[in-house]
View 1: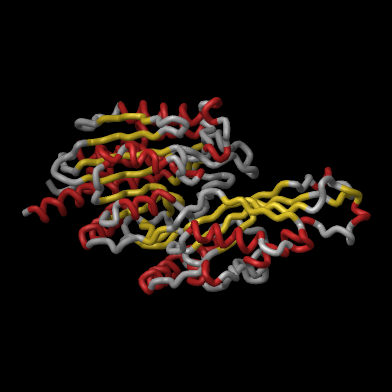
View 2 (view 1 turned 90 degrees about the vertical axis):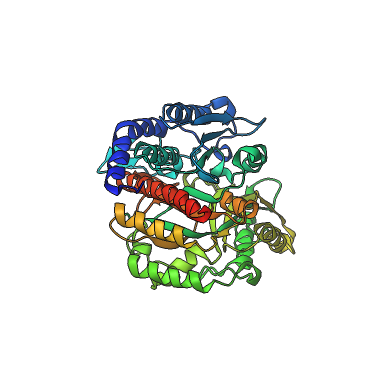
Length: 475
């Protein structure tokens, strides 16, 4: 049966207004921080509360043959697995996560990370768009097709609770679930972003990442700063070590082996995105008055944030607040480093290289250590087959009014690299709702509800076309 786009949109809109937003609002209230940010997550129970809320909603879906399970491996965060049998051979895997980033300061008055506020089509609060909406979008897309009598193939919805910590629990679950997952032909990931709210955006690449803590120790205890000039400041040594990695004037990473060639197709796509988004590449970020982006050309900014390595200092220890800082030469400085890598750079090798460069030949013989977290590889999408490319464009035109766009993303989704290695023949649609101003991980994070509705409908188009493509191949 052909898919009636208008009827599909009406159904999806009704589900979002009637059954999704009330539950998603309750989800925002739960401080379900990822294990990296809540070491006592088991005792606090917030992750389990979030999983239970989503599980209850999943079990109410009138989807033929739907089986919902919460799997808990020892000492690991739980995962939700919902399987809709569908029709015909083949499997599609739909992925999202329900763990959240920490609170962050700077929320506007009346808003907060755990205080949901619906205002002008925006649901403010931590985790709604990153990535709490995914469970609802995936199952609603399936439910919509069944309500319209349109077939889909077997669908497995997998929602993890460790993504914001690097998905370190997920490989064990992938092994444990191998029999249920089978070999997916199509993977739909709902944990990405969009360049605007006017069309569907498909992610073509993701950067890798190496996070870690650089610590410089110069004294066994703090001493009067009158000793400065005799003992080097641990901060100055840390600054000098960072200059081995980064040109502080330009932000360029100085280690040539951490750079990668950018494929011609990705350059062409970045040029198209630059034409569509223009100055909004930088303009959507909340820069202070007078602050300029690192380049005037949106095309170069896109490459900087998707294919070129970049270093950020995201945290520090050993530094008292200014009001508490006396005239003391501090014994140590620790800096949390986040090095984003090109999609094709090996993250394990990059972590070893970082440790080698930072720890070798320490200035003044200081004690220098770099402890890396589990590195995450990036991902470069395989070419879309014609049926999937056509489906993405048709869905975008039907529900947004414009064709789809394709862009690299500066963030990381470790699961994509894992899946790419495990299922090298799978096709991928990586999309999401995190657009201009949505500020994932930061203050005033929001979900743009109309975009979530449209993305849900577009996913339904892809599931229907996936079934149709399989039927044509068998004919």
